[in-house]
Image (cartoon, rainbow, N blue to C red):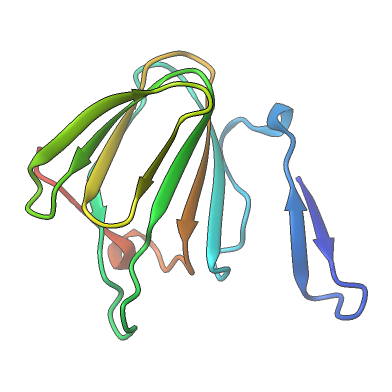
Length: 137
């Protein structure tokens, strides 16, 4: 991954470039303090992400993590949940497909080896205990 810093203020990260060939497992592309959280995920068939929903951040007005997954290669099953944690939809994401969660919950299951996904989420990221809660499934 290449980080590009300001020439005016050398401590200020301005840009990042990631090459898909560099991605193994999960690679976080943005520092946790940034408002845009980006990760690249290269995963094997059967990997799952437990059902969860992002929660309103304490002490901040109207701030919740909103998230998107863009499938670059492979297949992923997404399950989307309502506000009361009931399942709304189960769908398969194929290369070029994107899921976006504004509110409600979601879970993912990887359906093919070498699946590559780019995840975008609003930040900053304070850790899972301040960002999400699991949904009983």
